[in-house]
Length: 98
Image (tube, rainbow, N blue to C red):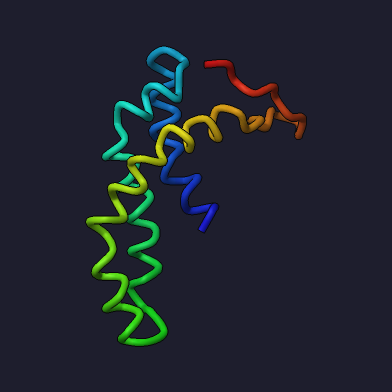
């Protein structure tokens, strides 16, 4: 799921970088959108659960889950900001400063 999360977070990070280079504050300001994007990944994965009981359980979680993910967005932003970005030619860039 990490690869899918990264794909879903990339537009938010890219938009923040294009605007002012500060990814964390921009992600925090769009916490609801970030949460929906990340939950879409989980929802897609849960669309074909192993058992009907697991589907029923998951269907009860999104309203509460969204609140929890929104609360975690500042920590997600710190993680994204502290992760080195790959450069061309396979070297690693220094983490962006926010």
